[in-house]
Length: 610
Image 1 (cartoon, helix red, strand yellow):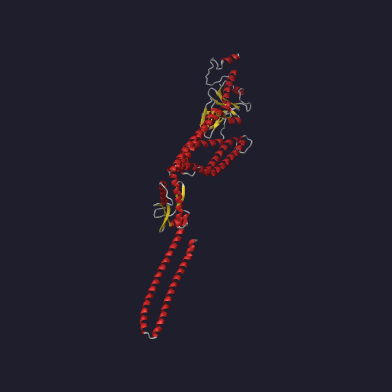
Image 2: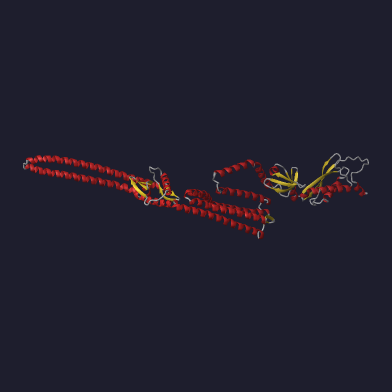
């Protein structure tokens, strides 16, 4: 706005000044011409009177007059040239001043300036450069000179003064130039140069007096006394802190003996009173060390700040301590919105999982039935959905974790993912096989199954392996991938639904009637504990060998877990029944020539018949 007004008014002022100067020159020229014309008229009248002497004198005076007129015209031309040059200089200075002000206004918002800080007190700020260097060089030079003057002895009244030297004003202390104030400084502050120099001189004078008071003998005595006072206060504070914590420790010991109870979760004692007491004392010691460290954090910088020579070190130490704390506190405060988002996501996923878990339990307990969805699918399906939901939650939370956008965090994540992908091919195969087994439903926990040559009851199914307990109480761990590539025989599933058919084969000679053998085998099956009445046992003749036929007894049972026990009892009953009936069992093979040799029937059964 100022530049706009100057640009409009300056040409008008110059034009007015030029017109005024030309008008004055014209008036002077007209006055000279009129004077000459008047004198010529008088001279003409005198000549008409016939005065010859006067004619000669007139010619002489005219010559003199013309010479004066020429001199006056020359002087007028010189005055006009000087006036024009002054107007042009005024025009250039005004435009230059307006441009400088505009440039300074544009730089004022983005130029920090160089503050003159002496003992933590900011006196003023320099923005402009000078022949002495940049603004920061000038500020450092002023600080150094003030420190030198402050440590000197004596203080003269009115020792700080200002002196004008052309285009700058110097601020002196004695013979030492503290600061040179330039036109640029005045433009930056929006003040006249002399006023700005006097303002700076007053500030510097007050600061020099303060420095003199600080560096004199009484000031040093005061600082030493303050230093000793802080040391004594810190020592007493240490003693008080240790006393209070010792008292607190005794209270904890007394509380442990009288009122403290062990931490018991159900029937398990997690922590007894002695362990809890030790933990409490440990936490109290940690707290004591933190309190002592906090006291040192404040007292050490205060001790260094007492003396001007170590004041900068005090601020440095305090900054080293305060900046990390400030950074952590700022980070925590800034992280609160992200933490709130993480909590919202976590609670949403948590209650979604609780709802799915409730539905899974209802299906597992067969209170809720879904067509084509078996109850034993409920728990593994819930585990899969829960895993997927947690994975989705982690994917949503990941961008809000501290340091998630840092290269180090991302590099570690990629490295961990690479290690998992390279080393988990077998694990992933077992997991996939476990899922397939779950939904194929070849067996469930508690079933008696046979995997290749291993027979046992399923005691555990995990995403990786399946564990069996054999009839000999051997626990066999089988990878799920092996189960997928092998055939599985499930005895319990058939026993529950249809009844499991147990069978065994005996060989009887051709001399025994087959109908009698069938009846004896069926009687032996019916006598066996665990064989059901219906369906009825039945006999199959599987082979007719050279010396004997093969008879296979088949019977239904419902308890597959007693398979071995039932088979053993069946074999025992077959022997008893056949021996009582006097029928020989030709297994293993017997070749009997009826030449009077003894029968294979035990003597007890033969004596019983007699």
